[in-house]
Structure formats: structure tokens, C-alpha cells
Image (cartoon, rainbow, N blue to C red; front, side, top):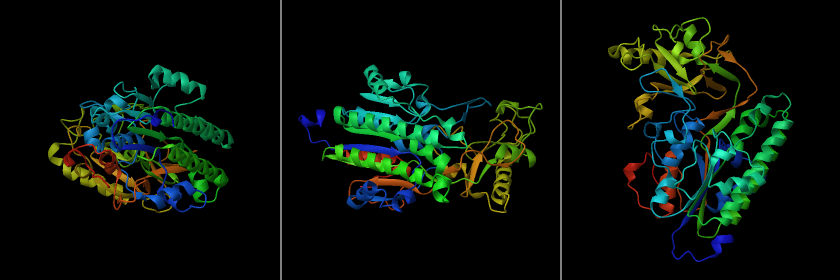
Length: 447
């Protein structure tokens, strides 16, 4: 077992966290015969469905999962965020996460962490013994710390992500092959550093699962062309989780979790186009390309996934909604969203969450005023180039869901109940016997 064979000189308990991005609990629990390692993990420990966060988008979810606090504290609300006091936007990276990650707390206690392929961790931190950044990293050369990690990973043909363009092809065989190659190298890297590193916390994420779900989930859920290939891919995921579990020493507790669930996608909903047609949004010029092109009469605009901002006086540079009309205008927009129907008469939105119900903290100044949580089948988009249609279809047939998020804890004393993502970070610290204040987290330990 490599360096684990040596005497550590203490009895500090250790935790290994394996993320399976976007994997719904129902998928794993309803196919125990095909996924025996997940079934064994559930039987020996504790497993169940948990809730994601608002909004259930990976760029916001992973910072919240790894810190235990909501986007108002992490400062990351999605794949694209807005600069304070401007219409400029940016893509949040690791340095934009304003709260302490769980591995930061581990390192502060004089313990060691190995962190691999976690989304929104680029550039890699130098205060952990080893980190390979995940999703949003430009390339492996810049994503790996220290340098010898990159040299080893290159021998595995390790890549940060699959090639999503392959998923846009009508025939999915090349995409599926690429997904297998990506997760094969990821597993080899995880297994290698689990056995070779002297760590107290190992934290690694398989993100390829999310990519496969985006392009094949409806095939699985509605008996499509690639259903069997989808299930075969997950048999490999199950095998890899089982082999990693076997590689762990007895004093390590394994946690396996996703950051959100998944469901079939029927329509992409282009909300800025809807706002234009309903008179909420207007642009300067004939071909708007960015948020800064909105006109002064605009009352609201949208970011993915389902985030809505009022064009508020004193907050936005060309704000048109007076502060004393904020509540009334927001209530009107909320009612319009709740009433929106799809092409076949289905309700598009399951519920609309107001800002103060979802976000709190020192970094809520860029929080959306409303977040729409969609009904299954409606993937909420935005875009600042006017689209010809509100409801469209594309190459993706799977979408994120707030519910049906997975959590497995290899500890029979854990109690999942109505848990959510915020509970995972304090659970890790509790399992490692590390002190923390309950008030530091939006969640609580499950053990």
C-alpha cells in the first residue's frame, strides 16, 4: 500500500472523497445488479438522495460542497458572474472562491491533502501537498502542482476533460470512446496517488459522468439508441469506485457524492429571448453580443441557469427600476415565470426562489434577485445574442436537477435524512476529528 505501510505516529482518522459529478441517486440505487460496488457501499454504510443548491450548476455547486456554505459566502453563483457595479461579466475560477475549502482547514491543522480534478480550482493551490485542477483549467501543464505530477499524468494520457464537441455529433461512438479514455486515465491517477501519497484527506472528482449524462441521459431514461452504452459506462464507474474503496486502508472513511442530479432534457429555454418578447429586456443595436449592450429601458435580464436580475437603479449602471419599486417589479417577474408554459402546455418552472431565501453572506452583492428551478425537461439558458425561438432543441439530451443528488458514506452510523450539499464539508471534518464551529457552515455533520 505504498507510503501507507509506514507508521504515521498518530491515530488521526482519514477521509477519501470521490466525486461523481451529476450522478443521480436513482440511477445507482435502481440498478444494484449492474452496480454492485455502489450497492455494497450502501449496504455497509449509509446512502441516500440529497438536495443540491440554488442554482444546481456545477460551477456554483462544487465551491459550496467543498466549503459548506452558500454562494453568498463563496462568491460564485454560476459559470458566469457579473462584476459589482458594472455590466461586465467573468468566468469564476478558483481564486474567486472566497470561503475556506475543506482541504484548507485540513492543511491548517498540520495535516496533508491530495486534491485532484475538482471543478473551479484553477490555478492549483500551493498550500496543499498535491493538486491537479479540474474543469475550466486551460491545460494540464498549468493545472498540475507540483511539476512532477504533470510529468506522471502525461504518461497516462491524462486529460482535464472530455472533448465535448464529440458529443455534438449525431453518432456518439467517438464521444463514448473519448469518455472511456478520459475516465480510465483519471482512475489510474487516483489509484496511484491514493497508494503513493501520505495524505489525511484525498479529494478527487470524476467529472466525465456529467459529460456523459448531458449527451446520453435521455437514451438511458427513455430507452434510446445508446442506453446500453450508457449503462456500460456506469458499470465502469462502479468498478472504479469499488477498486478505489479496496485500495483504502482500514482507518479511512470513504464518501462518494454528486453535486446535483440529472434528468432528461426536452427543451432549452432561452430566457433572454423570452424577456425580450415579454417586454422586460431590450438591447441597443441590431446584433447585441453581451450584457453591456442592454438598453436603459430594460427591467430585467438573465444568466444561466435560471438566474434573473432586475436592472436596478443605484446597482446597475443604467438601472431603470427604482428601489422603491423593487418588490413590486420582482413579484411581477416571479409571477410571469411561474405562469410560463412550454410548447405542449407544461409548466416550465417548478418554483422561483427569491434572493434572500437562498443567499446570505459577505459576497451576496452580485446575487441574482430570483432563481427559477425548472421542471424536468426544461434546461434554462440565457444568451445575449437574440435567438429566433424561446424553446429549442440541441445535441444535449440531459440536464441538471436540484433533487436526486447522490451521497454514500462508508459509515453505518451516518444519518442522511434530508441532507444537502452543505452538510458534506462539516461531515468530513467530523470524521477527521477536526474542530470547527457549527455556525461556520450552512450545513451540519451527518455523523
